[in-house]
Length: 183
Image (cartoon, rainbow, N blue to C red):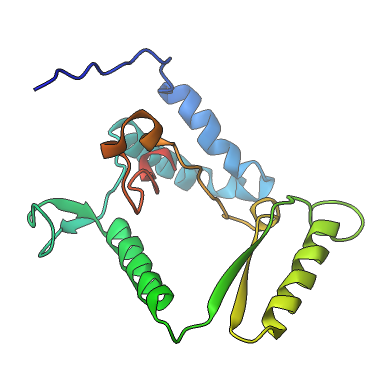
């Protein structure tokens, strides 16, 4: 068997406790949180522990039938994502279902985050959706990336391109996210 050389050497991103707590507590900057300082400090301690001990997938269960190792402890979130993808795949392969078109609003601007009005990109996306929705046998879905800057808690993590380094490292759905240790 050919020996594989694993290339490492990127700088560490591990934070010390003081830096971690500074970043964590920054989420509670509003003075309205001051009466809850003791409770927030307790939560910060737990957050530090889960970061330091790297609790990436804190909720797991046995993989079960259909997996190479049915006893493997696998993330419940990963299993849910996999089930959603399998459902979407069955729908996509159903010859009776409408052809689906994804329209992406890639502009981060919205009338909630920028003074003035909605972006031209959003208006064009909605016009395109209207055209697709009127066409027989088609349906459109909009991925509105402006919500990442205007709606609390919305995050889309990037693909880390594992396949570009080694095909066996990449699998679908990605098990890199969510990563609870990193918040």
